[in-house]
Image (tube, helix red, strand yellow):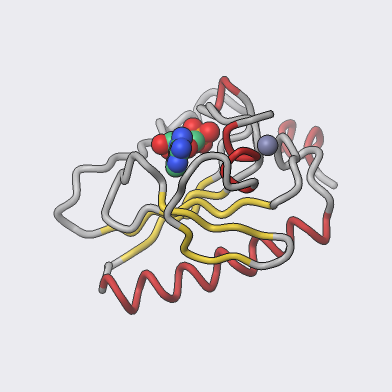
Length: 131
Ligand code: AMP
Ligand code: ZN
């Protein structure tokens, strides 16, 4: 059983921010910034590719509630909402979860994307990924 399933089953302690029938939100043990919270489905899905649509929407609805509460309670200036899908993308717990990381001007968190616009033809890329 994965570590988040054990948390959901109360086999491992956690700091519960929110709980309902389908969704659990807990404080992330690493606290990338004060209030860093994880929102997850109670049923085990590995990632965004296999999660049931309705459950996904419920998780995101809770994520929004958590964001509003963080803003009000912590007075943060911004929030990063983040999901890592796959080891290569930084996923270390293979149970779908969304990170909500409160942000402030003076924090030292950096998510930096390189500008690769000279490497790709956007029309070609669009042909590949357009739905
Ligand atoms: P990710 O790397 O996106 O899979 O995120 C996994 C997150 O789970 C990390 O930020 C960890 O700090 C967090 N984490 C791991 N174990 C626990 C735990 N027992 N309680 C709370 N958070 C945890
Ligand atoms: Zn699990």
